[in-house]
Length: 129
Image 1: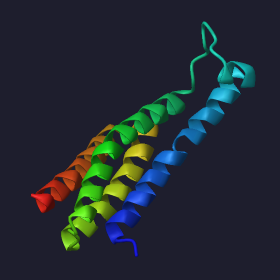
Image 2 (image 1 turned 180 degrees about the vertical axis):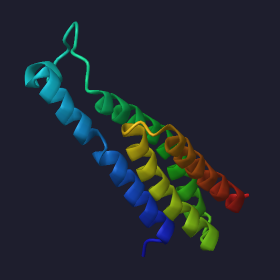
Image 3 (image 1 turned 90 degrees about the horizontal axis):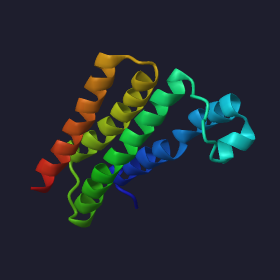
Image 4 (image 1 turned 90 degrees about the vertical axis):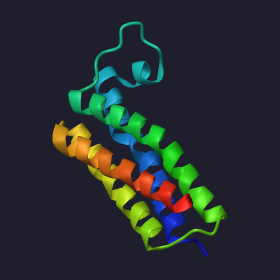
């Protein structure tokens, strides 16, 4: 049976797995299919929202490495409690808010969502130590 923390990790990984789809659709719409799958010398710029979504996806992937490692270590160590469950659940929603606020260029919300996600990672670290 999967723990709540592993379930949250699955949802976070799933979010990361689908984040690229909207900005790739924009890439095809802006550049055309041939240039989108090729390597044009002077590619047309993506829409502003797509550029920001791509950056949010990159940030999410960077943070997934840390989050996943912490969840997997906690699982291997048999550590699961209210704090770790809450940290994992909040982390998922913080990443959703980060993605949307980054894409829509809402600076304070984006920063707050990132900070909340980081604090969730800190909570996991403290639970492990």
